[in-house]
Length: 224
Image (cartoon, rainbow, N blue to C red):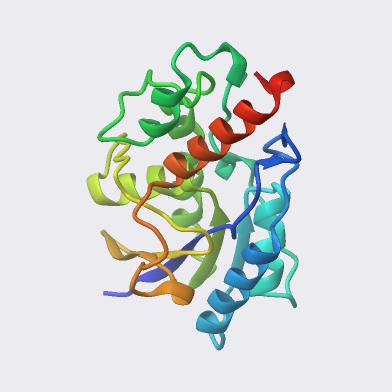
């Protein structure tokens, strides 16, 4: 049996809250920390010849891909973009929305921060993964995407259906690996070359973002 390999990589660290304001998710860039993390992950991937390099097209994913494979121009597949949140000021229970955003197995009508539904993410991301897997003209592919999106892709690879298993935790610049053939194998999840023992934190990403948002809101009245 011949299997092909997909490296799913989450973009490096970014800052969604800067100088007391919320940065639009489609505008955020890698931080210096994010670039450092990504360079370490790139070193771990050195020597791997990628036949395809695909990103969501969002700046943070494109910048990450260019660090990993600077000699290639990545393809833009918007279907792999992150879940789109709603307006934070309109969320009745912002703490619950943040800390439970990826908790447990989520129903398709569950929304991300009051915005896009899980079903909508599955509608676009899973067919895109199937389209990539159905193309025989590559052996090794790199897909640089986002935490929510990669959870959806891993859930499909594990279950073979429309599921969203939220309790995967995916660190910035981490790698998850799928082997694709007549079956799907999840070879690795959340490999983090710059912190292999995961000593940096025990918080979920969304718990960290809630703490940042709460701190910003308490010091900047206009942000509430």
